[in-house]
Amino acid sequence: MAVGQLPLAGRSILITRPAGQADSLCAALAALGAEPLRFPLLTISPVTDPAPLQAAARRLGDFTLVFFVSPNAVHFALDAMLPVIGAWPAGVAVATVGKGSEAALAARGFTYAIAPADGFDSEAVLALPAFQPAAVAGRRVLILRGDGGRDLLGDTLKARGALVEYLTCYHRSGPAEDFAPVVARARDGRLDALILTSSESVGHLLALPGAAALRDIPVFVPHPRIAAAAREAGFSMLIATGAGDQGLIDGLIGHFSERKHTTYPG
Image (cartoon, rainbow, N blue to C red; front, side):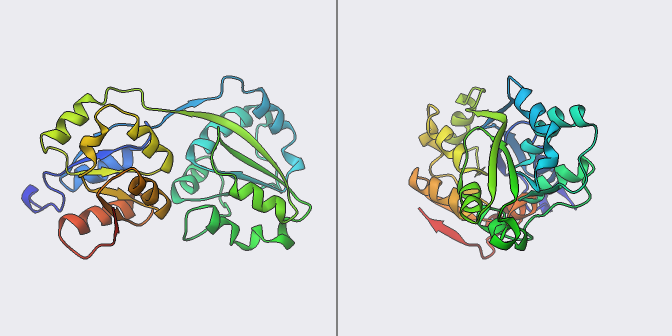
């Protein structure tokens, strides 16, 4: 296909995922003719003290199920835990949400993870048979996550009778790069789209000098909760997409080819 025929030819698209999590999306967008621009709104770093993770590794057999909240949780937790125990104990189920996290577990040798086929959030996880009261009452569940985050999953599991523990395996902080070049692009009309993939990233974006220059740029969001945060932040054009890379790509192509798309009014 000639460059001029590519569906995203000439479109400059800002990807705000953390470093190391945007490679596949950037490659796919470039193959479609876009100019992917990276500006991580979240900086991910390992915990300074791995001792709690190592201690949890030694008693993994006490848990019925371990839930990884994200690909970062998979990588940082397993990097600290597996050297201690060598192999994941048989009989301890793993669960997660989102195709990226499933892929991360598969890459680490897990042939099966409990995860929703659709929905990609805590609500979808809690609707699964493995998380119903009859399945979790009296069972120990370990939730591996970054610092902070939503407590809906753990709180609901506790209400259903589970014994829940949280363990922090990575830290999240704001962006570490200079935002001025992005602002200059937006003010010059050289930025066509912005991708936001977490509610937390919206807050970090608002705290950056010049962020108001991006408020009239189309914002692509894969979840209504992110859309709500962006709408509250004052963005004027919000486009809902499906989950994952493919959902975002389909949304971008649909928007820029003027096909029918769904928007959350600003």
